[in-house]
Each structure stands twice: as structure tokens, then as C-alpha cells.
Image (cartoon, rainbow, N blue to C red):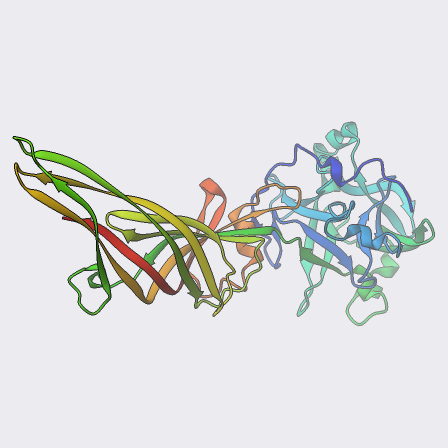
Length: 405
């Protein structure tokens, strides 16, 4: 196992947010990190060596180190960044060495040149200007009726990006730009080396967090009326105020209630995307002129009953005016509210990468493009969220209370 003097624990702090934009003629986007694989070696990892050469790592002892949570998880993550002066051409940036550039080397290997990841800043600066800049520009070319791509370098548009027979540590293959004109036809469809020049791009998933808020309940307000005889009402005496003075008195009466409120939320959407967590923000009237405010963890799965138990204490207050010589009785009225309430809500989705960077709503939208079909969505750049309209049924049971004289 070789040692790297830089790793995912030293991610470039200068890595800027790249605008998410569709790459014409492909299913790829700028601003989204991908893991690359070569079709000939689908289990191999396209990454770099300790000497900056790009390789297909095939070492079985090292492959697990690129798994999520392992020390090299970020080392094989690549992102396209469009060049402002050459539309349709892109730099391919590595997440760990974001300040470096991917280019070809003058050092020959196989039938062409090494592909390398340059990180020495003097060289990076030289490659950012003039004719040398062509060396760092790439273009993915989608294969017909396939999810695979060929890569093209602007300086060598007729060259083929592929692997070489020469190996790193006798295990992993170096990657080259093959410049032998006699080899060109070998990479055509149906020919013996066709798969050797094909690469797949798998998006690196963000960690998604959901917050369901702005719940709108379709409730018949009559159920909150104490004059509605179809529901169970209770009336308990809580206080007596007698005015034995020579003037009208005003008394503030307070009464504390303690309830364990149980609400069952059932989402009827078919939205199935995986979340790290989903928080449900609950706001609804359960007391006279007062709202229940709570936040609870829920599971957003179609048909699943989310039973939310909320220990809740509240103090109700009532101002009582008692004329001279009179007595006022204060009662606590309660009624049991139990029904199925349809509701609509907004699901706010935010995302973070494994190194805790906030991802843009465009990244979230692309990650969930299959799940979001048919949904009303809206991107909010101010908090980097994607908002989705969801709906369901609230199967509620709670006491609605008030103080009366």
C-alpha cells in the first residue's frame, strides 16, 4: 500500500462553489462531483498516485479505502468546471487537490503521454494562460445509446484517453492520451479496445436533510366550536371571584394544563428519497388563542404512520370583571377533537457533502430528479434549499380548551 502525503483530511479550503449547469449533449453537469470508472475495469478507482499520475487503482487492499467514511473517499471525486473563454470545454478538478489542474504530461508512456494532476502552483499558473491553457481543457463525449463517455483533450482532440499496459506498483494501470494514429480505429464501437476508452460518471450523493413546515390543515372550524353538540365537551369549575369592595374589580385568572398530545401524520405522497433526518414543524391551535409549537423527527415514507407524542404544558389566562357585590364563576371548558384532517405542507430539503460543505439546490434537484417528477418544486438560493409541496392526513386527538366566565 502506498503512502500519500495529502489526503481527504486536507481538502482545499479554496474550493469555490461551481455553478451547476447542464453539459450540452450529455447527462452530466458542472458543479456536481462524480466518481469515474473505466468500462474495462468497472471495480477500479480512477484517482491519482503519490507522484500525481492518474491511475486506475486495482489494488484489492486499497479499494475499500475509497468507500464512504474511509480516508480516501474524496480522492476519486471529480467535477467539471466550464472555462469562461472556451464554452463547451471544461477543467476537470479533483476534490482533494482542487487547486491543481488535470492535464497531460510531456513524459511519454505507452503510445502517448501520461495524464497527470498538477498541483505545483508555479506550473498551475503557467497552464492558466496562453497556448498552454489548451492542455487543461476537456470535453466529455456521450456514446450513443449508452451511459458511457469518451474524454477529449482540447490540445489533442484526435487522441484517445485510455489506460496503458504499464502499471503503478505492478497492480494499477496508468491513464494516457493515446496519440498513435494506427490505434484510432481500435477504439471504435465493436472493435477490440472500444471499452478501454469508455468512462462512467456516477454522482456523489449529498446528505439530505428535510424539514416539513408551513402545514395547512383543511379543518372545518365548526369542530372547535363549543356550541357544537356532536363532540364531547367538559366544563370544570376552577375559580370563584367575589367582589366585596365598593368598586368594580378586575381579576386575572390563570390555570395550568398538562396534556400528552398524540398526533399521527400519514404522508400520501410517493416521495421516497433517503434522508439523514426529517424534522416536522408542528403549529396548530389546541388552546384558546394559543398555538401548539413543536418539532419532531418523522419518517417520510408513503403510508407510514408517524405517531408524534408531545408532552405539552400551557397556562391559559382570563381577565374577569366583577361588579360591586357580585360573584363570578370561572370554568375551564374542554372538548375532545378527533378527526382525519387533510393537510398540505412544504418540504424544505437541504444537502451537505461528507466534508460538511453546503450543496446548492441545483445539486439536490439533480440528485432527486427521478423522485421529483410530477412535484411542484421551488429553489431558494438564500438558504440553499429545494422546497417540495407534499400532502397527507393528520389523524389527531387532542383536547381543545378555553377559560370562560
